[in-house]
Image 1 (cartoon, rainbow over the protein chains, first blue to last red):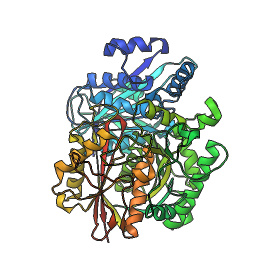
Image 2: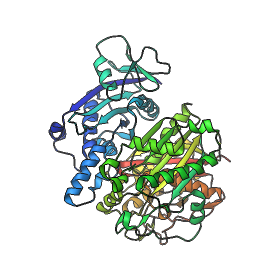
Image 3: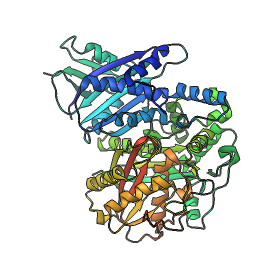
Image 4: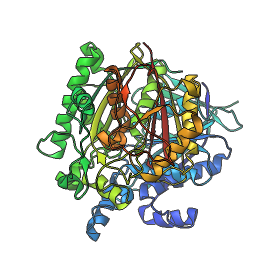
Length: 219
Length: 362
C-alpha cells in the first residue's frame, strides 16, 4: 500500500518553557495528564493543525525512554507529600493517555498505541502505521522524548500518514534493500523529513537498524 | 480474516506457577485472595506463588519458568526459537523494581522487555507496547500484523504484570478496588481486585486448534478511567470483530467478558452485550480467579480460557453468585461442547477497547 506523509513537525521545548507552552496551546495545564502525555499532545496537535483533514484517526507513537522521568518526578512529588503515588502516575498510563486526550478534543480517534523501541528501530513505526491504514484513514505517527536531567529540550516529533494523496504530500515507501540510504535515528528522522520537504526534488532515503524508507515528493 | 493461530500458551498466575496447575485449580472451589500487606497494604491481591529474592530476580525467575513451559509446548527447532521476535505488553513494566531498588532500579520499558526476551532465550526484534489494561492484546495485534505481512511465521507475545505497590496505591486512590473480593457481574460487586501474571502466547501462521479470526479496536474517550455507561463503543468494537470474522451474532458460543467487578464498567459491558445479542450467549469472566492482571490480562485470560476449553470445560466465574437483574448477565461454566466461536473482550484506562474473535479450527 502506498502511503502519503503530511505535516512533519519537530517540536523542541526547553524544560523551563514547558508549562507556558501547554497553557498557551490548551488554555491551562491538562488535569490528570502527566508531563509526558501533555508533551505528546502538544506535538500531535501541532501536526494535526498543519495537516487538517478528517476521518478515522489512529495515533501511534514511540519513545526510547518513555515516561521514565515523568514517573520519577511523580514519585518524588508523592514522596514529598508522604503518599505512595498520584493516581495517574502509577502505571505506564501517562503516555497512553495522550490518545484519549486527543479524542476528547473532537478528533475521531479509533485506535492508539504507545511503543517503547530502541532508537534505531524507528522504521518499524511507519511500518506499523501502514498496517493500521487498512482500518483507518489516517495515522498520526510520533516520537516523543522527555528532557533528561541534563537540561536538553523536550522532543515531540510528529507526522501524519494517510492513504489519500494530497497536494504537497510526501510519498512513503518501505525499501527492503536500502542502497545509498542515510543512517537516521529516532531522534532525527522526522526532523530530517521536515527539513528535506520542499528543499529538493531528489528522494530522501533513510534507514534504521533494518529496513529503510524512501520519501518522494508527490508528483 | 486473520490467518494466525495460537500455537502454544504458558502462564504464571495466582492460580499456580504454570498453566496446567492453574486450570486444575480453576476447576476447584473458588478462593478469596489474601490481603498481601507487602504489595497491597490493606488490599487483597492475587500474587503469583513464587518467592525469590528481590523484585527483579523474582520476575526473571518467573519468566524463565514460563519460558521453559512454552518452549516445550511450542516444539520449535532451537534456531527457530532463538530467532523469534518478542512483543511485550504491560501497564507497569519494571516499576515494581523501585520498591526494592529505588531510582536506580527504574529502567526504560524497552530495556525491561529486552530482559524478559532474554529470559525466554529469544533474540529477534523486541517491541514494548503499553495501552494500559489492553497492552497484552495490543502486543497480539502487532504480532498479527507481522504474521499477516509474512515477515515472521511465529511471534512470541508476552503479557507481563508484576506486583508493585504503586499500581495498587493508584487504583486505591481512584477508589476502584474492592476490600474483599472481585465479583464480576454480581449484584454485590464493589470493585476490582488486582493481580499479577506473566503470560506467553506463541502466535503462528501454521494451523493450530484455535484461529484468531479477527481483532477489533476502539477508543471510548468518555473518561480516561472508564467506559461510557451505555457501552456503545464496546458494542461497536464487538460488532467490528464479528464483521471481520464474518460471523453473525448468533454464531457466538461464548463471550469472555472484561468484567472484573467494577460496578460501572461491568454495567457498561453488559449494556453492550445486551445491545448485540438476543438471547445473550454463555459468558465467563476470569478476573474473579486471576484478579485483574491489567496489561497481562489479555494473554493471561486467553491462555487460561483456551487451556480450560481444551479440557472440555468453560470455567466457572469465581465471585459471581447473585445475578444483577439490571445488568442482565449471568456467567455460567460447565461443559464446553459446542463452543467453537468465542468473543474475547478487553478494555482499559485511556479508553482503549478491544475484542478478539477466536474460532476453533478443529
